[in-house]
Amino acid sequence: MTNPVLRPILHHCAGARSLRCLWVAEETGFDLELKLWPFPPRFFAKEFKDINPLGTIPAWEENGHVLTESAAICQRIAMGTPLEVRPDEADYLPYLNWLHRSDATLTFPLTIMLRYTRMEPEERKLPQAVEDYKGFFLGRAKGIEAALDDGRDWLVADRFTIADICVGYAIHLARGFDLHQELGPKTVAWYERLVERDGFKAARAREKDGPKSAAF
Ligand SMILES: N[C@@H](CCC(=O)N[C@@H](CS)C(=O)NCC(=O)O)C(=O)O
Image (cartoon, rainbow, N blue to C red; front, side, top):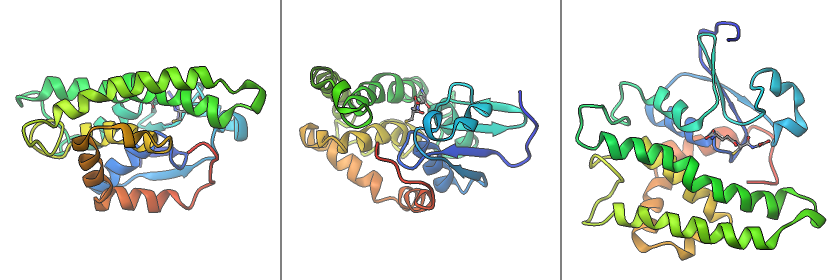
């Protein structure tokens, strides 16, 4: 528990997973305070650990609590808006699964690639790990193509939700490795719909005021 705050604070690094949260805030008009940090803060801004002892981004401060999971923060921001799927809706269970899958299953292999291509010094780069985790990611991303079958525009509930934002961020990250060229056509078309949204563009514009990073 930290000091109570009235207006929630989102701690963000340009291009990092916290973009999910900023994007949801822009889509829903949520009033938050944005704090931009250099990436990775554990290296460039050690005082960030006073806010989030894990040293990871995002962090969300609200009412004396600190949340550190991007998908959970998206759920918090989307509460009471059409961007969440409610428990009484038919697609609630697949919605929950996509939210968790977005980070644990889809973003995780990409971060191994990120680390061993862009973040480690030359002598610690690991091409074998990069290749292996690329295979992991591409295999796992096939589920997105399947979910968009039968002419569906969005992953669940026949509307744009935070499941699209959370999973869409993983595809956004994959683009940085040119992996999107190896994704299915429905996945690519869905991603293009996502990045054309005003909310995505507004989030990208808002993060530009912060420090740039070599990672994203
Ligand atoms: N599961 C967490 C993961 C958070 C995380 O690992 N964030 C990355 C940024 S994308 C980070 O802070 N990495 C820097 C580090 O580990 O020092 C989430 O979804 O927010």
